[in-house]
Length: 90
Image 1 (cartoon, rainbow, N blue to C red):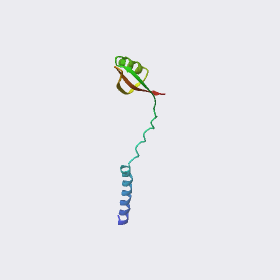
Image 2: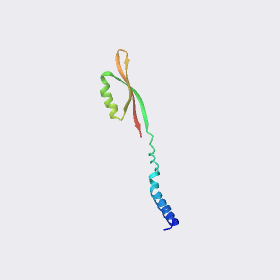
Image 3: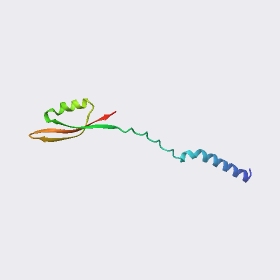
């Protein structure tokens, strides 16, 4: 085999080997996340007396309302819980 033929064989082997190894060095683009659907909510503020808080929470929770925030406040001599409620709007 002559030097020219040997050089051609080496170049061809490198070209074939390089082409098969190329996918190892190319990073695929990561998949794009699906667009998130924006949720819409309805809000309301309610005040419930201390002794009626649990039944009131069960009632509003049964209607799909979630408590976002709660604080205890004084209404004269008795305490109440002021709640911010929300539920998803279709």
